[in-house]
Image 1 (tube, rainbow, N blue to C red):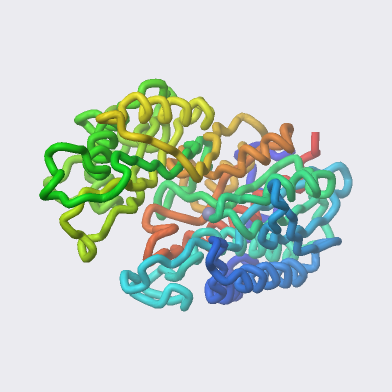
Image 2 (cartoon, rainbow, N blue to C red):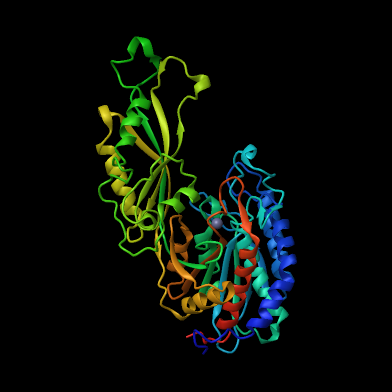
Length: 468
Ligand SMILES: [Zn+2]
């Protein structure tokens, strides 16, 4: 068993193999980015099928897998068919552990394309970065797995004893709706000792990170209704409340004056965070000069370990259609983040109770389209985490750090439930500039190369571990 400080077996050879294979990895990543595999309803899912097929072919080309399937599984009461996931498996030999390599091949919609500096689905190189929807989230994750496997094959695939499960989901960006059913159905085939989830990011361009905490999420549509019908705002205004007024009143109770959440019953997680100053927050968030940050406590504890509530959309007449009318009903999309240590159920109950008890003027309140995910804390004391931190440090030449993430990866709760004994390693290729989900998403190519190398080194180390 290698000591943490001992170099990884074949480290030099793997470094060379990753460098030699990198142009192909970038070309394959670009090919994946050209497929607009948006998993949301209302988008053409033929593209998601095409990207699943492209991933299947990439897996087949590595030559290491015994079985490869593109699977689509019905879910929910209506038996709606989920979007295609790729499952490729290879059995472990000689008592070595089995490693699941997770990523997703679907993407978020491109949003307002005029805000992009280049065409969203045309991979474009500017400086050290490759721009395009999915270039970072999460097609770079897919290619980190493929690139690492290729490097291992290049240095002597016949010595590869670890079992591998490449699992590339096709609807992560649309709530992983059929994932639980896929995991349940293929449980025996994909059971793993270690699960590498390459869908997160690094501390900065030079410093690799293992993500050990994720916030959960609760999102829903809130409808606020005060009137049975619209009426003239000059005739009735000032005597009865319109729905926008009630909504503004109600929403304003969600936050304290400092911008931290004011909902009783939402909890925080008590954990030290690395130093991160206001200047860095301003730079990374684009906070305007003269506008103050919100919240309290260490800055990173606000995004990693405290709850937050954000209004992400409103259905209300737009200005073009703004007549002199009292609007009877409005809808608001609320997106809340749940601190590690609290279940989404508890968090949702607290928010719902707050909204109902604070409804101004007795306005009618209803909630629909609930999307949820539990927060997660990783146990980073196992041998797999030790190997991951050591190989990241080796690949990046800088000590790896453990970080939290403000975003959520709801399906991790499914993985934990179905594979309770597995060690989960959340890695990724993103950096603070990657802008996943936003216009001008990009991957930093040197980081992409180091991510492939650190995963190749990790698999090489795990290839020397025993599975128990
Ligand atoms: Zn992702």
